[in-house]
Length: 148
Image (spheres, rainbow, N blue to C red):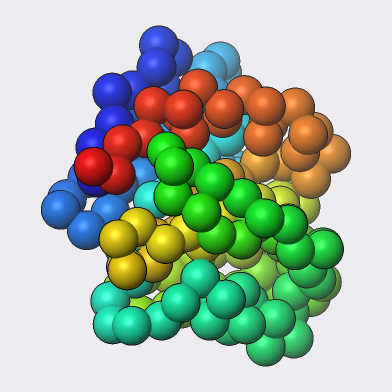
């Protein structure tokens, strides 16, 4: 997996199994809350979980509300996407090889795609009130992902 970050994005973490990039917030008074307005997490799933298994793990968490599943593709890898919102308290969803933080007031678009027999999870994290705009803002990052 690799990515050439688009202008305005920064890396929070990067290793051979995952990376986390964000579009930093700027300005004074950022003492509380996230330090980004939009973030994208990419992680390989350890083991033989299929994309549907990752979505099933999200569905099993009672703190989450999921939207309708949709077919998805990133860099030619096909799978499933679903929008996720916290219904209760903020929570962490674990899967083999990684985890996602689901925070109150934010939403995730989670993609689980098959890359040569290995599932890769891509999650776009944005504010609930501006989620559609935040997902659009993350498109250049998704377009820059290379699984080859």
